[in-house]
Image 1 (tube, rainbow, N blue to C red):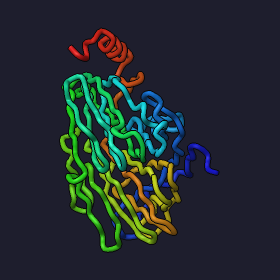
Image 2: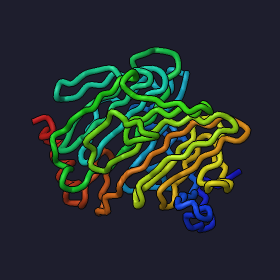
Image 3: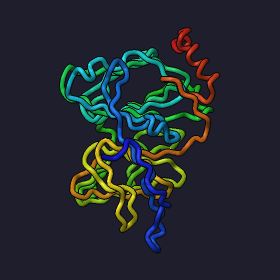
Image 4: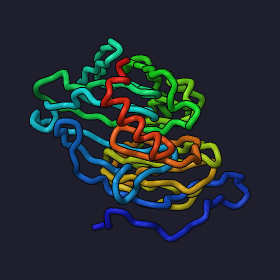
Length: 304
């Protein structure tokens, strides 16, 4: 079995002779680890774990997936955030969210909530079901210092507003943020210029995606297995379900599904390059700012 985190032999981003494309390769593989959060919700964490604490600007990636009500019914009661963004993407089931500002809504299957916590928000995310499959992801993305104290905001996007393109070879791509094959996602005005794709490649199929040079990139597989980080004609690195692969620099990534269909999240964004101070649900630049965030929350200033 692969180790929890496997650093691959350093391989420079490659390009087929004369192709003019600088393909990204796999730099590290991390196996998602079982953990719990909120009031005991069981989940798998790949980013934000001891094996991979962050990939600037990405701070955490969790997958929650269970058809056992006891694994998720307690949900995520009221809790604070400051200094970063949370992105919740649902594949099955529904969550109800509410916050101290009076916002309330339901995040159903296929929908996305992109929440910018900014200067501070207290909210809850609770399952809107008592049985059945609850399946989705939560991603944390850092904010630059200049935006950490901005007013909080939401971008709530239902499934029917998330575009999907399909190739003749039955590759299917849902575009949440960024652009893929000329299709742009509905999430806009994000400082790190993110790409967030849900990609499904059938057995024998191939998918390529442009990623700006210098942007951090990763893939998280949640169904099947594929070869990631190959060149135009080269073989990539096999990555199976429940594993995250970080990508070297370059301007394109290639993924091939071999014997099975593979489905994965492809995430990329512009690094911030600033100091990161973290304490639970607070992400700032200095320890002093973290202490202020804790004091503000405890004093009720978040709700003031």
